[in-house]
Image (cartoon, rainbow, N blue to C red):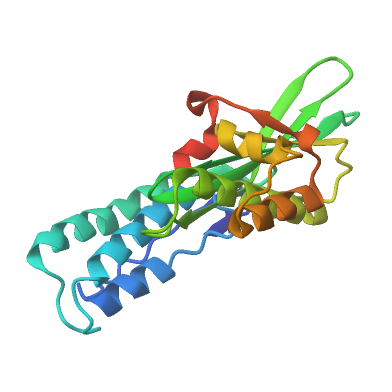
Length: 232
């Protein structure tokens, strides 16, 4: 990830070094991707998913991958050169004079493969002009077993809270309101429940979410309108 001074934007440069098609080479390639703000988090996470599947085939760090998997990995690795076409403005949104009402909107989603969360800054000035900009995104590979989709959605909601805390601490502007969105009605049911007792796993994550947010801050969004779906 680079900062291009001439255009005040972020770009990417991809190493052309040929890494061996081994467990060690796969790990080196995935870990070489520097993306602290999560602009290309879905791409990076795809590499992690492939890595998880590929390295299970062997415990030897320097043994070549199976032929059936080599092509799949090589295709993803070569596709990284497309990242060099990206040119992302450094500023979340252009500066307005006077500045408007600023809000943070955080979305979360989960699937069998991954959990994801993304935050946006929304600015609306006195003239009703609205601007929205990407602030921070994050993806993680989902556990392979032992987790239902509702539980993974709950983990994604926890990630959304953690992202919101990071943004509120680092963004450096006055935020008037913060809202959270999930396409899981089960998660919303968990958060709005005041009677039923849940398993410890669920209860701990509900407590973590409600420690930093209020129930009224959480809203439903359809899957088709959920940008966090890009990461899962």
